[in-house]
View 1: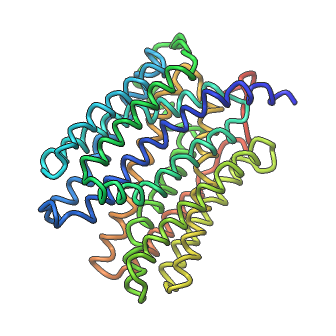
View 2: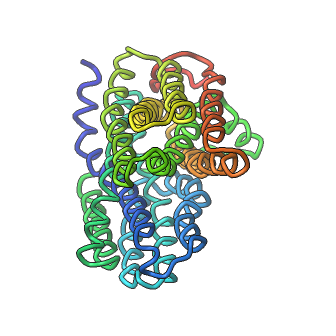
Length: 398
């Protein structure tokens, strides 16, 4: 009964933070899918398409740790609101989306803005729920981001069909601005906490602590499989006699599995039904198993089975990884930690497809997928120092 009151307290402001997570996922994937579908119509070569797809993630890789640390310094709410308003403003440059240069500038600007409000939103969820149902709330937060992955390409395609890229970017601008207003109204202004000075040696030690390194590795490994699956599931579907729509459906099945599992696994974690080590290990092994199925026995049916396994595995590992970081990080530096963990996810998101694609080019796609399955499974070897589900404020951090 002790945790019921904090959950009721955190639920209302958390809903606005879930919306912020939805904005970044919806924005990234709706535009990416739209550029792929409309590349010939707007004169994009494959190289230019690849560059435009990458600039969003490049912005996030460099800026997420910076904005995460800034949220510790000035508070999370100003960074979230500022990032959302910047996303809304920079999306307006996409009104000239038929021009590849303006499309690239809009994509770069959106990635930079998302680098601000994405880790700051995670940090705010961590501060609101520290030691009190962190798994449940991070499960809901991740579920809303996954929902953005599901409907982003579909809704984006509909908006482009109705009014071109200009309508899609206008809708994203309005959505981000409305979410910013919601955050201003609903989210409390938590003041920054006093921070102690850290030497370079302290920073290096914190970055190699198991409580940070293990969940960040789990997040990177699971996201590497997610990124590769989203990219290669449609290709595998067409190779085995399915039409492109079936490949898109397989990606949607993966995302829906993740949407459904994340809140449930977070709730089980908070109730002590599973430990953090058990949840993250099971999630990674299930993910690796799904990738292995694609490598060993791809087919019209097994592609969808693998999609469910990968989505459920990622959905199990992700909220527990973030919840463990939230419960074991001192509140005064939770923004920096979340930004660094998000950096790990971005590197995994880029590294997974690169690993599969590189090995597939030199050898074959099954070997590339098999190598990825081994890498994801190997990420289960490092273990947490203590096999506990949560850590509250009055427990030692070491």
